[in-house]
Image (cartoon, rainbow, N blue to C red):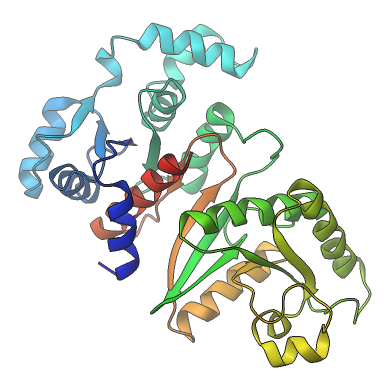
Length: 325
């Protein structure tokens, strides 16, 4: 485990945050859940048939005896869950629809979070991102003042830590979307003990080029300042002007950010995804994430190629988000 996760683990150990794992029969989930419960990092809730989970855990050599196991088919609050789901969906589902939908482990697990039976959810080891995120958007929903969720990576190399966003969710964010992403990324940065200094990125620095794309970023900057006047944020910047003091001095001598940014807001998913992968592959940064932000309660998505260690780490991050609230 990296030094970063040792530090984060220390923040959540003993807090008894309840994290739902809808994919209760996945061996990677079982291994991580057993370790999380044994080390008192979080209280795992596994979704599925108790006998099947116990059998699978034994086969995998995972000790889940300290984990909670909840079977949708025998859940004592199921009818209450049905009623709350129908109310939450506001006419988009009948009770009959809800009874079928809530047998899906991701919907069921998300409702446990919504009803306060859990503090966060981790899924995606055996499901697509859409299967994980859709229930969260329909049930947990975004925070007041936030229209869309977004995905950030914490880029780590030794003692260096940076936030890159949005690298996972919004393909073509408009100015308001970018402003929301900037503000929420500042919140996420603080969870990781990063004092946010936010740079709005573009191919232009402070008006050096004019186009609809650069104007969008400039507008986003003003909107972000209105949303959070205390946030240290500036732009638009080319990346070198945001990260290299000598370049900032030449290109943007009057900017608030003087080559010392640590939160980078990319103008599109295309740019963000390419950017974090370049840092990861050529710069030897560890890419921690994607971490979903902007929701009322934390829900995070695993890669289907994840390891048990990845599950363990994302559970720690999810618990950290829950503690932060």
